[in-house]
Length: 274
Image (cartoon, rainbow, N blue to C red; front, side, top):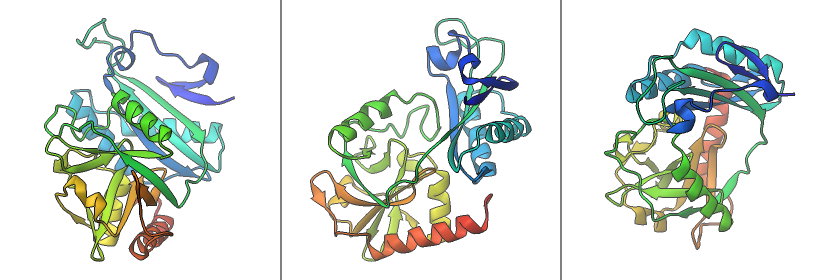
């Protein structure tokens, strides 16, 4: 049985409980991180914890205790051995009255792990008409307010795709429901800047650093012109895109994307906490 860390200790999944009045449940007042594990070893955990703290400060939550989370992660990984895993760290506003006001009991911390399969090397995506608000209070924060992504991802699944790409309110390319997007134009790699409203993805940052990709303000119609397109995320790493809506890209994985995939695999294999 899966074992989950809840507020200070491991619990069997059937006994791992938070109050129904936890602010993360009632109003989505929470943040989270997803960390890839391989043979019991987390990847880029320090970067994920640093982003968790940035998200906490953006919501006005107390800074999470990194040492406690590392202990929780180690305990959960040991208790749930998997070859390839998704470690989920969730940190919420805690027990609170109904409504938007936060209570005084302090945050809740949940750490869980489940097994996953390696993603395909390429995938299909769609674009959606809904926008990311690059000027909103939650812009750039990894919060548990994910219903918008649930709706968009459901539409993608209906159309045979694994991801949906959003514009921002200025109709500029922004991000996917759980990924960052890169485009290749004339052999050069570009990705929307954080100012577009996209999440500052950990895999995105490493890909920019390791491949020399440029942060560029991009119109949505760049997706109709790009020579290659790829996605990055914790569980995708670097994944090629072979179809966008009804546009079929060149069959196979393009040379620039293939190089980015190879570089990421090599560098990530050399350093588990870059």
